[in-house]
Amino acid sequence: MQVNTKGASVGQVALAWLLAQKPWVVPIPGVCRLGRLDENLAATGTELSADDLSELDDASASVRVRGDRHPEAMQRMIDR
Image (tube, rainbow, N blue to C red; front, side, top):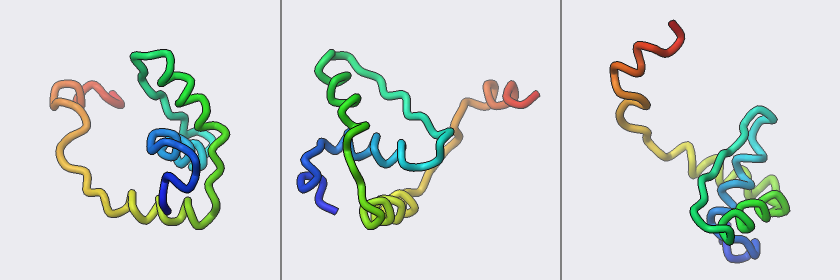
């Protein structure tokens, strides 16, 4: 999928993909400028086809996560 064919930024496509996952997946993007907030909100109107979603799913599956999510001391505090 070519992002520019969607008429959306890479960030908007990423947010639209996250929103298309499960109902309990809620992206929380950070912004420093008001314009970025407007851009992020516009992601709710970005339509991705089933083929787009499949392609993005495949791309995300190829990303290898390395390292721990939290420092060891914080990890011990989770699910106690």
